[in-house]
Image 1 (cartoon, rainbow, N blue to C red):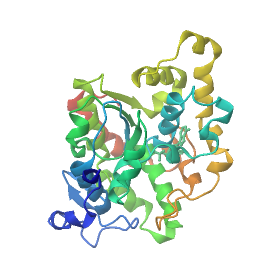
Image 2 (cartoon, helix red, strand yellow; image 1 turned 60 degrees about the vertical axis):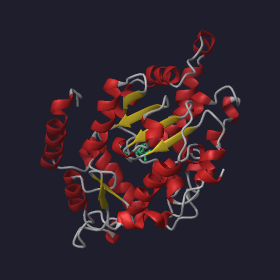
Image 3 (spheres, helix red, strand yellow; image 1 turned 90 degrees about the vertical axis):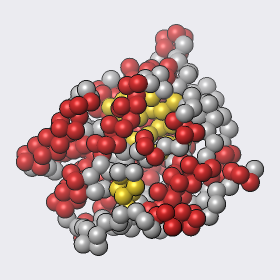
Image 4 (cartoon, rainbow, N blue to C red; image 1 turned 90 degrees about the horizontal axis):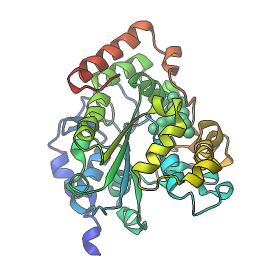
Length: 326
Ligand code: A3P
C-alpha cells in the first residue's frame, strides 16, 4: 500500500513558496497565519499541504460520503446527525458512541489527516466512510469530483458564522487580548481574508455544483435545519442511502436521532464539557469550544446595524447571479 502513503509534506514547499502571502502588517488572529492565496482562497499553509497531498494520494470509494462546510457553519451538528443516522442500527441509541465521543472524534477531517501525514487513518476506516472537509470545491481532488461520492454541504448566515468564528478564535487563542480587535476581524472577514475565505466563494462553489448535480451534492442551510430538524433528518437519511422505514418513523426513531444530536443534548454530555480534541496539536481545542449558543441570529448581540448591513450587502451582491436565495 505504499502508493497510499503520501510523500513528506515538504515536497510541496517549492510550490507553496511561489504563492502570494498575507503581508506582515495583516491583523493577527492565530497561528494558522500568514494565510497564502491558493486557487482564489486564503488558506493556512498546512491546509494547502493537506489538499496537495490529497490530490496526490487520496483514493475515494464510491460509497464515501463527505460533509463539507465553511468553519462554524454547523459542522459539529451535521457530523453528529450523519454519523447517528448511519449507525442507528449498530447500537442501542441509549448507548450510542456520540454519548461518549465528541462528533469530531467520530468523523475525521480529510485535509487535516493528510496535512499531518496520517492518511492511513482515513484508509483504515471501513466503508461506508464519512469524512469531513472545509476545503473549497475548486480544491477537491478529481477522485472526489469525478466519482459517485456524495457530498453534504451546509452553509449558514455569514453574520452568525463571523460571530461564531470570533468566539472560537478567542477561546483557542486564550483571550481576546492575544489577537487583533473584533473590528479588524470583521474587516478581514468581509474582505474574504480569512482561512478558507471568502465565505461567499466557498458557498457558491458548492452551490453551483449542487445545481448541476443535485443527486450528488445535498445543499443545506443551518437555519433551515434548526427550524425543521425532523424534516431535514429524513432528507439527510434518504440522501445518504439509509432512509427511515415506516416502522422507524412510527416508533419515533427520527425524533430520537434529532434529540440525540441536538445542541442542548450534546453540549451537556460530559465528553463535550472538556477534553482536548487534537492532543497532538499545540492549539488546545477543547471539545466544549464547539458548543456556544447553537442558534440563528446571535449576530444581533454583536454587530452594529451598519456592520450587519455591510455583510448583507456583500451576500446579496455575491449571490445575485447565482439564484441562491439569502
Ligand atoms: P455558535 O457559535 O453560533 O453557537 P462548527 O461545528 O462548524 O464549528 O460550528 C459551530 C457552531 O455550531 C457554533 O455556533 C455551535 O454552537 C453550533 N452548534 C454546535 N453543535 C450544534 C448542534 N447540535 N445544533 C445546533 N448548533 C450547534
